[in-house]
Length: 366
Image (cartoon, rainbow, N blue to C red):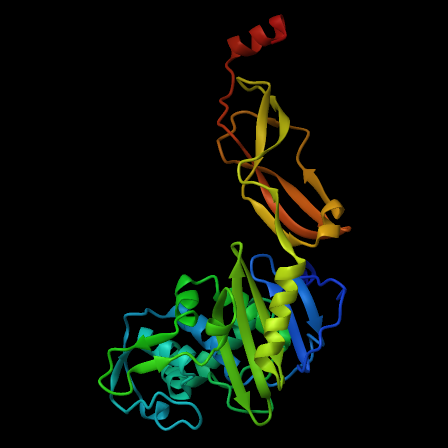
């Protein structure tokens, strides 16, 4: 791994900094985590970096790679290698033609191990190449303690993740609208002639207010594994429990903890005025700098006064300056820790003053 990539990964982990758990939850999970999907903030954790088997929660990454590199309308001819895979199945037949979209629904709702292999071979060209794609993606997003050896999650001693990494992978997958749509679907009827009805195994969709995904998993070695998501007030939380005998209740406790103790606060809005900057040789003396994006962060009530903002801009800038030009940065800190950086941009276009205009400015001082 080169130095730049290593620094980026460390930054991801640092920005996803956790808080000290203010209360102990009675959880059965050996390892768990609660993460804000919007910002990556960790709201609760228990042994989050222990490497553990992940069972079928593997399929979150399989779906992510398929959505990144495949087309939902692709017609997939089912290869012999995808038929008769042990465990959960959607009962694919060799030579059957199934769309990639239908395979993804079979993958995430019915946890089809055969669907996972069919997707991997179609998207990756081979099972081995697809697994390489999974591992490269994991490293890219900072899931550095994860290793995949298959696309479905059947046990292998070298196939593992951590609760933290699995939350990162899930957060990345939710950047795809189609992923969110698939994992929130309770029932689905595919275009297949047989075995075409898929019922979602994830009870979070029925049992938890705002529940909208994502994946169950179980093997004898992994125990019960569950990734759940729920959205309230336009904020999605991701709960991960590994080796949890009381898996759904564990995740519901985690989600309750997050929604009950943290609320979204707008730190600054997109286009909000931040600072006036001296303009040299411009038709105006100053240019307004505004935030390029809005920033909302989940905070406990006692944390609101711990938010501090600093800006990094030059002392002045020379005209001409185009609207939207990036000129500086706005940094947000919580209790001294960096939690976000956004661009500061020019609110308007300011043209360069001609010689006559500059002369008049010197004479009049205006």
